[in-house]
Image (cartoon, rainbow, N blue to C red; front, top):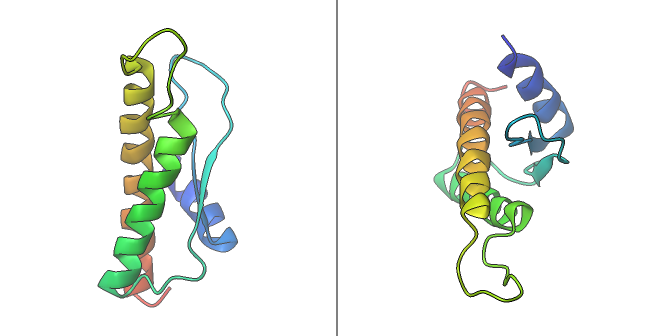
Length: 102
């Protein structure tokens, strides 16, 4: 199972790392720090959700203006959705671990 090692690494480093590579692309990881948050509280969880959202937007270039067009990039949207999906999977596991005292 590939998720467990990724979560363990993220938990030890107190960062959430996501790589939403599509079709074999090589891209850097999206990293979200959360060591300063109390993930057993709703406020800490909301803050982490906001950080994930902001990091995914920045990582995928959501909202960036492409020269010569005002149309949104469909690739940026796909990247954002995949980055959020992967980050939310890790987020759920990390919060669950925090709630169990880990």
